[in-house]
Length: 389
Image (tube, rainbow, N blue to C red):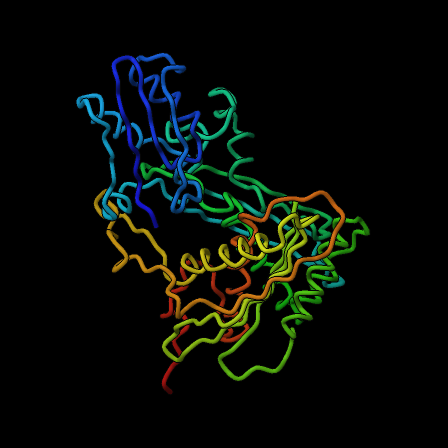
């Protein structure tokens, strides 16, 4: 919500910077390079930030503040307008995923293939925030690894699995969005699992449970969060016409499952009424923090699911402010119920966890309510509009 801003004071051969940055040493390095001043003469104070989610890994706004401050004697504070901020961003990557699968004679999944296409972040001059060398960042394996994270088949047992990546060049500057590549890979994977379940006439929850054949501790964690999420959401309960539930899960350092409950109006408008989230993050050092981060991430992701879209026309971003880039309103925020699984495992992260599963959980719930598959975000109400006949 806070536009890009930085304060810089240039005093002879010293520079002092106050910036809400995620990456103070990068700002220090770049200001030193631009000014020709030794790094130790550049002091960067990391201030509190009114929102980041990856955008403040970049240093363009700090460099602009320095450009002005070097011509002035007093400290200079740069504050972008909302229009500057929205139209000169580093954007979440446009991505395309193609998933295919085949069944064997028993109706079980015999093979699965996923292809991911994005504008890669590695190897471009827009990329900061990691310590790999420029040569490493041009390595195809490194490029792919940064783009397909979260698309692997785990925790499901599929005998034959292929994952490949192809890059698509674009002049639109890109950076990470909250939950990095997992902001788009679980959407495709968990929606595809639902499609496979429907093709076999199976319940989506039970279908997932049946694919968890591995007896490993990791698989047991997934079973546990799925079972608790389903129980807490009263999975499978009868719902009125136009309402539905959707489920999604993931395995990683932290394990989670979400159930979304939605309704779809006759004009195609989607309302997300309730989200049940189960989190296994090892020892929950601060349970209130786990709940707050999960609740915030779910509401954060809902903007991208329901309305948030940046479009380009004639080389420029069309949206300029919150009148044409709709963010989630309080009246749209669902009831969020967070359950933390007791654990003695080492603590792991939750800051981005809630944003990963919300899109597939909502999309799967929309299908349950309407019979229409959502394969593109944000959801287009025109696809879901019911005929008056």
